[in-house]
Length: 418
Picture 1 (tube, one colour):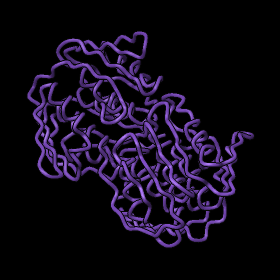
Picture 2: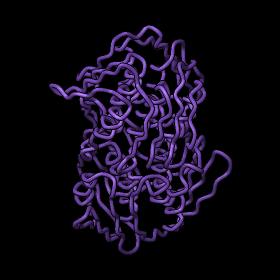
Picture 3: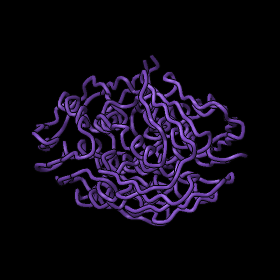
Picture 4: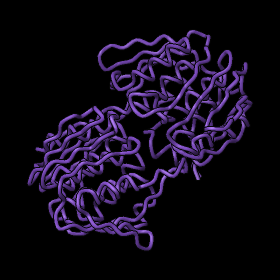
């Protein structure tokens, strides 16, 4: 099994190009199941999760061609409606095929998904919503079995905003008979990107970017050509790296409007952040101030940046309170950061108290999930000595060539093949 080694103590400087968003690409690629003809997608990142979803689409009968960051998918001839356990167990986003398969083939059999061990992330939002659209749902032997005589529009309310739930139901509703209203819908940029792609296919969607999304069903959709939006979480990770190492990094091919919450918090820590077009520049000033963080659905602070900011707070001046409200098990990385000398105390209610220390030290650590992996790389960048990060296959799920990008900025980082 691969591991990544990081020798700390170097200031990072230079420019880095941000890749396409994994969390936007996954549902947009899946949306190709809704149409006859070839869909073309540009700026698709080369990631393990992307490979997994393309394998799943291919297994369902789609024809796929990839060249560089461009992927073409033709799902005209799909007849298979079963997403098997062997393919779905690799990541939770695989459940996104449920809506398109129901809309297109009127039946679907999808294994209950796997993925990072950061919380339950129940699928009931998806199942209850599909039932509201007229699907018969049964859970049998670890599979979701769904069928319909024809989906019909309806009102659906989310108890809490669900990103994949909103995306799945949007894809089902675009071919449903009548009007669907999603209330308390997710507002994340990745949800908006999917809605934009569906609209380019001919879907009728209103309220994108608000908590109320209205979808008027159509009888068919057309193939599209679109470009995947930049990955705001990858960008945020490199922004934190600049502040953490007192460096100076320019991030190209990013969307500052998607990261206003991250930029705001980073400025409060003392970092100098400027934006110009699709570029962001972050300059560390040698002093890191403690701030409090509470993760919330967009436009609040993203849960996917919580672990990275925790590293920053570990070497800041003062005490930081970090509250995780999205996932119940997303502090697994705390024990690994403490092994490196971070002063972190967990309290009731998913709250971490982080007391900044003057420095942390290298240690062998183990990644538990995707964003925890990124946080350990960041910790390695400022730790005294050489940090050994194990189970880095999580990183490959969501960060494209992360060690190469950090190396070009001046980091001493390398991969050891296992």
